[in-house]
Amino acid sequence: MEQNKVPEILLAPLQGFTDAVYRKAYSELFPGIDACFIPYISVNNNEFLKKYKREILPVNNQQKRVIPQVLAKSSDDLTMLTEILVDQGYSEINLNMGCPYPMVTNRGQGAGLLPHPEKIKKILSVFFQKFDVKLSVKMRTGLHSAAEIKRVIPVLNDFNISEIILHPRIASQLYTGTPSIDTFQYATQNSHHKMVYNGDIFSVSDYKQLKELIPKTDSFMLGRGILQNPFLPAAIKNIQLSDSEKREKLAEFHRLIFTYYSEWMDNDGNVLNKMKQFWIYFSHNFDRGEKILKGIKKSRSLSAYKTEVIKVFEHSF
Figure 1 (cartoon, rainbow, N blue to C red):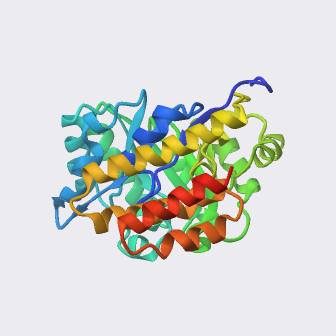
Figure 2 (figure 1 turned 135 degrees about the vertical axis):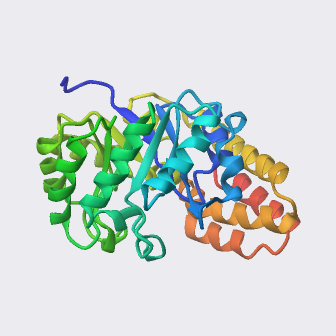
């Protein structure tokens, strides 16, 4: 592949953060993203959880390429979710085999599937028999051991997977330690499918160092790096923005997020909680980010929150 090829950048599905509000506001303001992934939807006791319905409605996903992610522990789960998504007009979905949190893995979902290649094979066999829909996979290298991937890759090779998005950590690491580039390279060398790298890209420098290690990889998924710095995809693609443009976009980004949550939420308390959550990462765009976040978290009402935000924007640039 060409060394200077413009990379493909995908927005990761981060539960609680990259929701429809975030994706809509982000896509209106920031260049550089080639696709958005909807955080996972799932079923419980053979019923679709209705809290996810608004997330998958096409009217809330007007970006050029939006891929919903599903969390499934069986072929029945995947069948139900795929039928729902096909009814909504989706022709491409992503299977989550990477969620590392015990509340998910203990149910045999997410990375909890990785120690069971025979179960993965059954799930994929039923899917490809029933549906003419693109299916990608997002996964870790294993639940407890990176050796697990050596049994999963051959299974995936037997199916027409559109791409494998690999976060090269084992699930039990969560986000600690260092991603295993060696394991990613192993997967790339042994997989028949397009490989996408995911994990710990927080700066252009991170991207360039990674690219030197995996020069043939041209697709990257960013999550926390974008939440902390919404300009990162543009910077990686060498799209230049002036300081004044960045200031204006940050202010407008906050305004849009606040406006959309105010329209979607049923009370001020929920809006306030969502905005506090938003600032966990958004505060990284400002000097004294930790102090700013503390001030935001102390807000007990929307009026107090607005006063705090005005101070941030007035004194941070």
